[in-house]
Image (cartoon, rainbow over all chains, first blue to last red):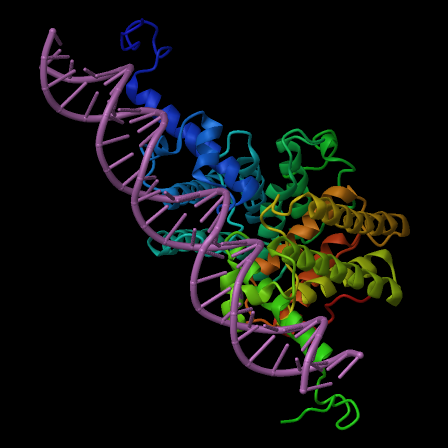
Length: 229
Length: 229
DNA sequence: AGGAAAATCGAATTGTCATTCACTAATTTT
DNA sequence: AAAATTAGTGAATGACAATTCGATTTTCCT
């Protein structure tokens, strides 16, 4: 029986207790996110999640306080991913349109990645109020940042004049909806879908749109299309 | 106590038994649709629906077989509304882009109208299989019709060359997402939202897009914007 | 080694919910 | 006006699910 803490022997190959715990917790969040996205919050029982992890229900309570907190953590992670995409895009710079499109493209990748813990809220009014209001305020802030980008884009000439609020709703619809129809084992990869939707969005925001879009997401990158430029 | 069947006396003012039954059933469908859209299928109990109608749970079983059938009827009605919008647009004629945009605009109006019985499926895998496969096949047919319109539009020059499948997913995201954020008592009316999203969609599909979009949905119609032309 | 803390389990507990049942009142049919 | 049908109710019924509890095993610390 191997007992040592691993750190000294094989570097990080043999994880110590804290690492094991963190890994298990991460697996729980991933399993829960998959189930919630597939069946919805109310349509998923803790027993389902536990079974998918090979443990029993009570075991889950060692990692999260209850089902509500579980969803809260996932919604929080989703919004954190959104902000990360935003910061990354801002750091890369470029026109407001480039930054907006890069944000959404990266966010699509996040929510549809194989090991994502992102849950796009489909059922409303699920979280009770200590949680609910917190999530709503973070979400509103993110949407506000997107609107700001649209308005900057109108100002810097990279985005067609429009109503930023309505346009952001429209964009978020396209983006969030990908989680409904995207399939890991489908025709297109996660990256291809992200690039394809980004190309559509990019063209629709541009004051002087391209004459055509890619005939298929799998060929994006082979031609002039794409986010940049 | 008025006993007569109304038909002879006051025209149709006093409804007869069959009409009363139909009205009650319609009210049930409306109440259920509102609840399902607000809280999701699993988040809504038959008791909730019954209470909103001022009756008790068992009474509902006089009008629908069970909860599954209730959702099925609403999903079916939603798709029926989608096809109606499509047929209406086809009947009005015009370029493929005009017909596509008109379809989606009218569909947005349908799903967000005050007395709508439309439920856009948010939780997947809710209906069991006698129902599920039927809904999926109707939905697929509708999406196929939309893709046909996109391809016709590419052919007749009214729509920018693109991947029709990806574009239709993107459009349906924008359209269906309106049900998440639209509020009856909000700043914009149902018609304004439909026209506003339609304007965005129309521009994004056009090979030669307009130089600007409306600054606010409430001003659509006052300027050159809108669906036609 | 030996006690504390953590992880897990099987078995409650408690609540909710879809659905059914037995019964009553009204209404339609004959 | 009796018989049949329809609406509706309050009280079961039977699942299922979230959470808690007590016991057991494992792991960690010293």
